[in-house]
Length: 180
Image (cartoon, rainbow, N blue to C red; front, side, top):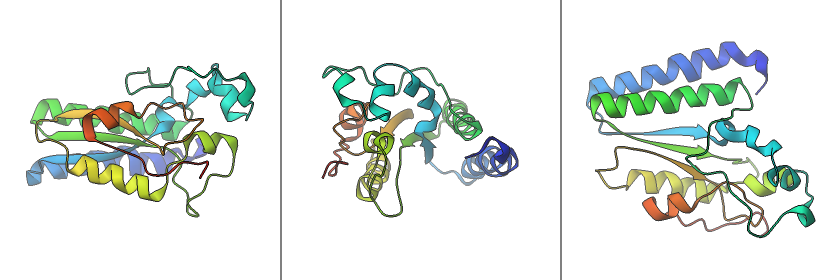
């Protein structure tokens, strides 16, 4: 998304997200699954070893590389990423203030043709099947899960977003990988 997309982000991701959460609260909805984005932490990609991965320099990547986790500081790469942070923060507010269960799924690249096409996408791609599984796992999560955030990517060899939290809490088990 371009930085000049502020008006679109304001309408959909700021006002629209508020309307979704507020309408859900008014209707007595017990759980909201917020479709967030890995853009909320994408500026970590400028750090080692993530930068080598997105540039396709795999020989410069250690096997025991550190991954970006659901607790890593937010570092958005665009106004779009900032608007997704707003949605996550709004979700936490509605969870803690109104007792609503809110699960934030930070989706990576889900593509129309269901294939990655650049080194960055090979690291961060999420197949359509794995994205659907993430939504299903969020829907089936225990009712006492009041708020949490999970990355949704496929099981990619060069992935640097940690999906172990989603495995541990939700039972998320991606079936695909960019290398298949």
